[in-house]
Length: 255
Length: 260
Ligand SMILES: Nc1ncnc2c1ncn2[C@@H]1O[C@H](COP(=O)(O)OP(=O)(O)OP(=O)(O)O)[C@@H](O)[C@H]1O
Ligand SMILES: [Mg+2]
Image: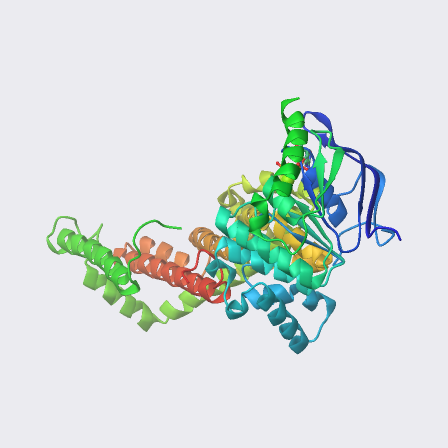
């Protein structure tokens, strides 16, 4: 069986102000149905670029990316993205935000509201359906953003440092929330982070990227059994994986 | 967003009244106290009488309405053209390349300098007033709207795209509502300019309107009527501003600019 996401020899060149920049080179990546894959790498190595190409928001300049066997040509509801920045629509209530994708699909009003409430419950914000985004904390906004993507039932969840702007405690809470949701919804996730602990806690596989031009230099399977919570971050298995990833990253940062 | 402690609405209104009262007091002192001759500074009560006079002459309401009507039509035409153009400039690189330089050029032409030309083209009727207001506001407004649209965070549109929105849906469901608070501000500012240009145009050539009223008063050295005209224009400005602020509060209650 072939993977849900298949990337072959992907390349991306930008024509920057100071001449051409190769952001990605020779990327091969398979993400299987139900897998949670995490990409870590030094800043500027092309992680966001890779995710944006999968989302269809940018286009590769070589190679190919396929979802469900079909080439990715543009953005679509089958690949929902959660951004590091807050992207709730400030003019819509929390529930209307979650309904956004369903409204576009033409789902009838009552059904939309019901689905939205279910996913708001899943992220623990059932009581806030009528609130406006400006009344929410950063962590709550990201919960809603996650509910909004899930309500759309994408084939794949793309997350670009979704917890990057949050404080350490809130981040832990949301990491555990994501683990819970993942177990329940069986979502396939491609997740980017700077935070190695976060990567290991969440991942089935951690991919380490090289400096620019970004290549995937290693795949580190994380065999820590599930269900996981923050306590695994102090286990010996965790430390061993972390040491390996640190080593690989350190080579990139100091090389 | 202000870091000042918030004054209650009643408190703010009180302060505003106080500043008007201070100006009125200084005016009264200067005129009733005989510091300035009546020829240059009318007494406050004679300005009130001038209002009554003009009302009796039947020109107060009709001239006011003529001016308001010209502003509304001229400015609405500018809005109807500038908002779509601004959207286009902000979202299409080619659109920006084609339109922006031309608009930048046009907006540096002082519209007052176009008054003679518009008189030639349109005569002294309403059409010429519409043209002046349009020319004075359209170019700037298009650029302001483009800025307001460009200020909508890019990730909002991208998030919508990954939720399945088409380009047209992103325009309608994300960019336009997202830019609305900024656009409301742009509208409020440009309608103020529209008033300025209208009065200038009416001072140069018209046979009705508030600018014309002031010009005629000057010919007859009726300083009380000049002042009445100025007060009226100021009050209309205040009313317009208030209308827009209220409309903003009603239309975009979600904006960070509007208090929760
Ligand atoms: N639109 C663009 N035009 C030119 N260069 C770009 C563009 N977008 C990204 N780049 C370059 O491509 C490289 C990869 O950028 P990208 O944002 O993917 O990095 P990243 O790994 O996500 O970094 P970070 O961890 O800091 O978010 C960078 O060197 C960046 O300067
Ligand atoms: Mg990035």
